[in-house]
Length: 101
Image 1 (cartoon, rainbow, N blue to C red):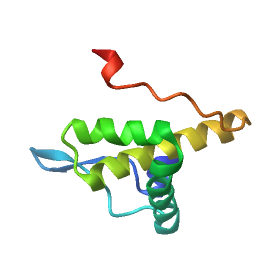
Image 2 (image 1 turned 60 degrees about the horizontal axis):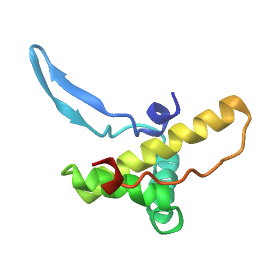
Image 3 (image 1 turned 45 degrees about the horizontal axis):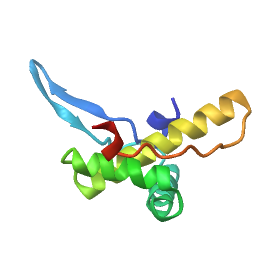
Image 4 (image 1 turned 180 degrees about the vertical axis):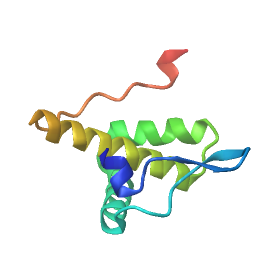
């Protein structure tokens, strides 16, 4: 998957019978990872749906960096789907957090 290649897919740290939480891997294509990270950062002001996703992650208690990495992972998944299906990007209306209640 493209997220694994970029180093954006979460990995579980385990050693023997000890299993620790998920963390961002250190490997992957550094140039692609940096490009997706910067793309996610820039999209927060340009794309309302990206900003809504980021704000939702922050509301769940994620740090700025964690929320940004999750946004980058989401964006690379969309990019992979576009390449797989041969389609263009179609922005969606952001789902408002307050309307869900």
